[in-house]
Image 1 (cartoon, one colour):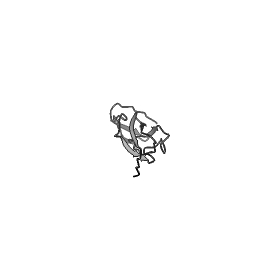
Image 2: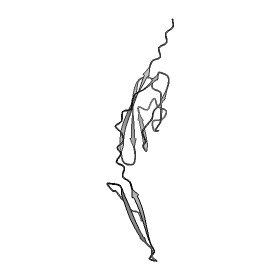
Image 3: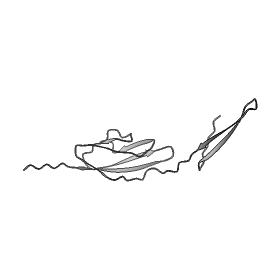
Image 4: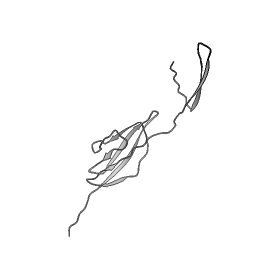
Length: 117
């Protein structure tokens, strides 16, 4: 037997099982409702020199999709390595079992200036 529950608050359910031999057992299960909203964060900017890379850090989630993807090692992981040639703002589209959202972080790219005297 499958039972579905969709409580609006965390709830403990009690199940009473009676067998054909009149044996009775009582089980309890708790369904926790997560009210944590995800997304909406703008992280402090990061700075690298042109030609180097930096590891980005996504928030806890079930899935991640980083954009733009062209300068990332893998746009579908929590910690991709970014190697942009110019200053770039990355968005990460995140989902969990209850919600979805978008966070962002900017990677500032500095040009190396060498002066010969």
